[in-house]
Length: 151
Image 1 (cartoon, one colour):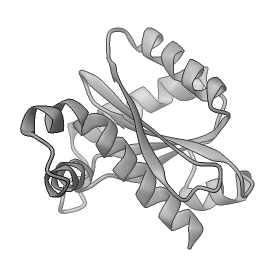
Image 2: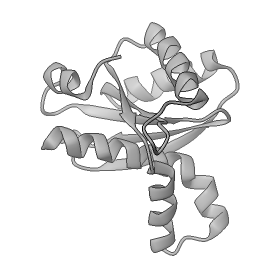
Image 3: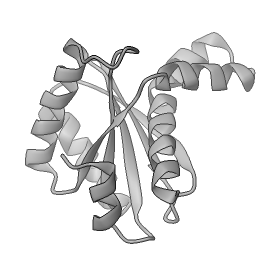
């Protein structure tokens, strides 16, 4: 794992990134364009075994020419780290052993809330909102990171 500042130095201007919202049952996946301007919800992966999930991620990465991974890092509102923070770190450790790309943990406070509120503003019905929440949260996470990289 590296910092967002280190990622900025490792990738060139036209590098696509993938954003991940790692849940215990589902993983939200988002991808940005080559110029890193817009993060788009891509898909939701149902978690079976981590090895299967990593295999699916490898396919997405190779098919979309991804150069870096942004993972939502759950931090409590007061800045402390709880059990979910450790769970994400453990998964990222396993992912980094299998996928040779720079990985950044990005503070995801409010990403799920932001994704839910955004879909509320877009007048999306509740069942569709909850079905898409993971990939929308991943896009919210990735958008925050690419906005930071572009400033």
